[in-house]
Image 1 (tube, one colour):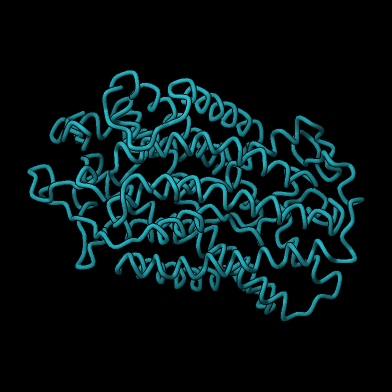
Image 2 (cartoon, rainbow, N blue to C red):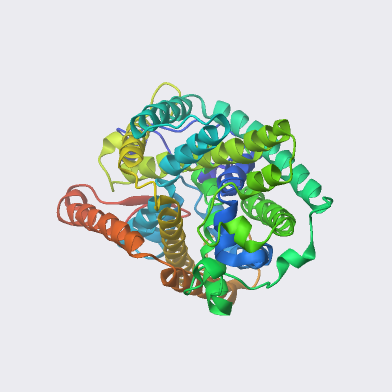
Length: 482
């Protein structure tokens, strides 16, 4: 990384804060981001098909094209302001510290929801394969052990996490691609399963999938969920040992990789059975691909191979990527005076301590309190809305930042300039609006509680924290107060 990205550890503002270790190659950062995006493919497959029907693959293609402009804007910001805590930094420098906090708070809603959901996915697969009939207490114990392992990994040398993520990612890619090809060449694959093409349980479609075009558009908007994760790249910038400009390759590369994989897999899966069978008659049924394998008598060994690569590994990569991102954002909030300074303390491996412990505690509490009957849909819809709102704030910040500081060096040249930034903002706004139409009452309730907690933190910062310790950021002009 160039010196522009490096904070002076001897700076007065850095007193009491640890420094992150630079040891991640571009491949590891790409793997961490791509693995984060690769959302529970073999577990939530029926969920996605419930939302967008046989045309789910087309929905993913459309969403790939819509997400790329947002990713390109992130690429510009990431190379101009290469500091951990991306959403916090971009929102604060581009708008103000209040928007910096709220953009972070919204993205954290999605990131912190991943670990408990991931553990539930892992346990659901184990329960399916081995028929364990796990009780709630047993789930809590096993889930706690899994989360403790991720905490241990996150507290160790970041390079180890990068190596493990890279292995799991490429194994997952192989498992998904091989399965998709086998589906396409199966005697049971038929274009007749794509009729009617436009189906969705949203907009009143229910078990018949008769939500129409409006329901399908709502379902496609919710597919933004399987694309968030590319923002992992700028949050790892202080630990990269490659040129700053190369961040952009990992950002848009992760989006394109996952977009192509989604399109291939869901086109192949949709042709294997009817919408009713794959979606569980609009009930967001998990493990649709595994059910297809069972129905047509595929070897048990292959089902286990698919389960390990396309379920366990996709869940594992998603969990690890967002765990690391959450920790770094909380670390930045401590360092930049949004949270107490203890959040910026690091251990001998130069990894944040308090953020890891807090995330473990929140994940364990969420796991115990989880409503397992409606959690899958509630969590997914909430996650999509939160991400879209955060992206909207960041796109607005990029527009304002160009207006205020057109002279700042931008190593990544954004094609189309300000007009392109406005275009990306419009995309984020439309997606955010569409995802509100798919929210359930329980999702809004959960989101409201989370919002109230955010307001409490925000008031504490305004009335106490910031009066004693001003927010500061590292910019192309040096360290500045905000």
